[in-house]
Length: 484
Image 1: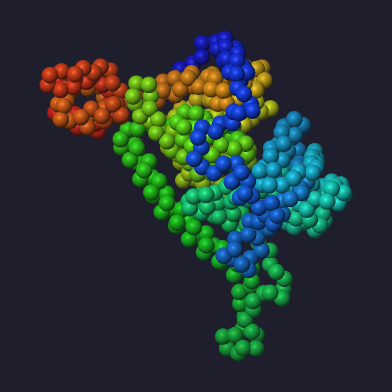
Image 2 (image 1 turned 60 degrees about the vertical axis):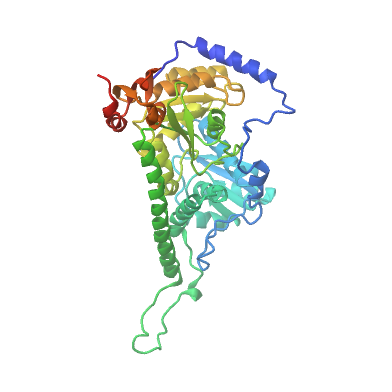
């Protein structure tokens, strides 16, 4: 991979970005618009269920799915490791998640403990304090910064007397709001069911469905309880969703294999949620992907064609944003989508350089990439938002990450250097050929331009003389035209 010569490039980039930013007229410039063809921010806002926000699955009407009311919320977290700054950053991210779901954050509490309380997540003293905050603020929901057990959810709700939602349920609900494709919706529904299944509550003894004891032969026995029926229905629905997702995965794999057969390199744009991945894809390809200052604005992958300066074709794909403690249900459900990352030839890892802990975000993203089997794929870091980032933090990241390139998608600063790094890191065809292709086989010349690397090209009387590197399959097709 291409490396930077020194930190002088960072100073030059920061100055270039500052100069470009100063030229923008903020009254008329709309950041990161790039002629987006998808729903704009106002349309997306209209999708938010401000009142009665729910993860209820309507086709299983008899099961209790925890209905989320995320209008006025109080956040609560347990700080078990790291510094207080780490804990505050986690709560800041939880607040951003809550706001993305359409809620108003009223207050936040953090408790220092060795481990979460097994009964209520927070200790009894903090429960009393939380109850007082909920009452004084008029909050209708408490959001906990962690994944709570069914018992913890139930106990905490019983004590604070309002709905309690954990981080996992919140992220799942945001995904449910933003999924738009058939595959995305199916994946989210499967993830919700996986999460909800162990958290089902019965509706009371009176609703247990028992076979009549007075029914004589064949009528004796406990029968199937209400909650057992609910669980069976959910498992049946989950099995159906897995089959549907599997069928959609076959179609996605077919397209991916077609690109592989044609030796088209693939570049996956990955990174923490809201780091600027969709904006970068738009800047590089004018793809028209929805750009929004909100978490998880992108759920379904967007694949676009791009071309190097010397004419080689490759693909760029935008992927779902990662986040710390991404629910395992989501990783499992979105595995087919995330295969755009694990099956790529190069990962462009977009990092928000203006964030307080960019190195922590890099670590979180790499953990997910490792979980999906992509840890051995070459990686370039696009250190975004250089126009507003702290220069010292940028330098720290660049010292830690030698393949980091400072950029500003907003101003365009550093984009050319990033493109050069991407092109230099793409896999190159391995077979070197010298051919004389007759003019009636222009299709082969086009394929060499698209799939290969042209070293020399000359138009002669008998045809086009080409010296190039191509893959094995194309080299086989060119055998009859090879010049000795």
